[in-house]
Image (tube, rainbow, N blue to C red; front, side, top):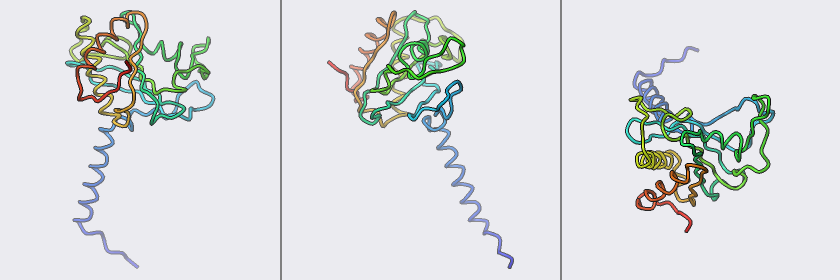
Length: 203
């Protein structure tokens, strides 16, 4: 039995639906940024992790790596981590300090870290300022100052909660080391002055 061809209107609607679905996936960072498989691990993690770019100030794009809490991501705090320097990549904190994986001496193998911060927290590692690590600026201008870096980090944090709205009401901790002693307080001032972000900062 020969089936009749679908009516043109049906095909048009189906095509439109597929295009809308594809466009929506393209705008959803958690989908397109999710890390499905990480080389160097003998066993892939049970928690979700993401890597991509957050919009900083001007034409800046700040690279992030976000690891969800292994315990209770919906209720665990969000911890922002910034390495210092200035000029040190926050991936140093991720891969050699308190991230879920630690790079081994062979430079290839990863082992799970039994003391990882993401045992109890959702951790956002942000490479800042632009020019550090994988972070970049469209205009290729990388001279900066503490005020501009704070603004760029603030806008990147806003972008993070836009892409991950499920964490917007979680408690937020701003942490770092070395020159982050400048990055964190200057960023905290902006966060506390903007009630629209609806973030909970510990006293």
